[in-house]
Every structure is written in C-alpha cells, then in structure tokens.
Length: 211
Image 1 (cartoon, one colour):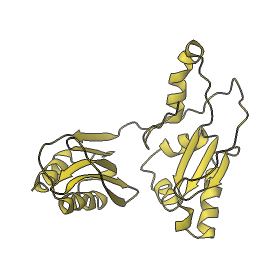
Image 2 (tube, one colour):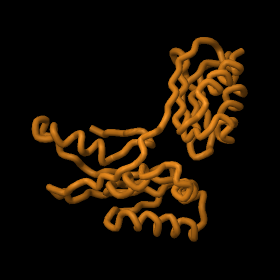
Image 3 (cartoon, helix red, strand yellow):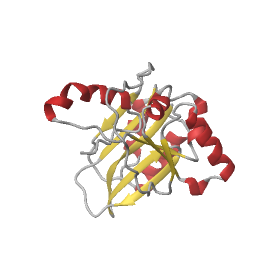
C-alpha cells in the first residue's frame, strides 16, 4: 500500500497515527519518500510561509527526490542539496526529472522515534463543487490572480472543471499553472489551499468564469 498525502501533510503525524494499528494489521512501514522541486525549494523555504511543514517532511524522509533538476544550474542544485542536509544527514538523495528513478532498497530499523516538529496548523482551504460550464481562459485568469496573491496567500489550487470542449484538470503549485484535457468527467470541483485568503473573492471570480 502506498500512502500519498497532500503537499502540505506532515509525515510525522501520519507515522504516529499508524503506530497503534501496525501490530494489529501486521503493517511494515517501508521507505518514506520526500520530493522537493529544485527550482522552487529554496525560495519557499526562505519565505517561511510553510513553517515546519517542509522541515518535518525532510527530517522524516528515508529517500529525498530532488525533482526538476533539468530546470536549474549545477550550482543551484548543490545549494538545494546542502540545505536539505541541514535537516537530514542520512537520507538517500536522488536527482530526478519527472520523478523518474529506481528506488533503492533500504534496511529497516525498529524502534526509531519520528522527529515531530511543532508548527502552525492555521492553513485554510476552500473546496466547492459548483454547477455550470466554465471558460478555460476564465479559470486560467483565476489561477493567475491567485498566483499574484490578489486573493491573499494561496499556495496550492487544483481541481476539475467542464468547458464547452470537455473536461479539464488544473493545477497551481509553486507558481506554475498547468492544464490537462481529460477524456471525461463528472461535475466541477475546485480546491484552494492557503492561509488567510479571501474565499468569497475566489468564489466570485470563479462565478465570472462561467459561460
């Protein structure tokens, strides 16, 4: 079984939650894999907006993938790796593009405590499922406004929406906006994650993106 938490999840919390049922269900926890984007890691870490979410993930990972290495210089890549080592000296670090790599086998160690950091949980989220047909360019404008912090601090947005040409999946992460045409779908769903952002303004902007 693979557990894939959200980008703002805390591995230590997940691991601790599994402890009471490990023996009952005969669970063996394998490698904890963390992923950082080479092009956005340092700015996000230095901004302090994510608090200890980043450092908890780094400290508790057995393997850390530095992804998108094709987008940065060797000097930048070295800085990213040096910063990671400040939080985790023992993790295996792999350089990847599109997260493609062979995962090495790890020796399991029993009785190791998880590093649990104390941090601010005050993240806000907005999840709505409005009806109607949307304009792709209208949704793109909403995401651009989110990226430019016109609604406040929004760190992540994702979802599915219907247009006159069919369904699209969208994603906003680390300032990058991506769309993918889908073969089909059922309804619209928009999810925004951030801190102290104007949810009403987001909903009003989405309403203007309808056809």
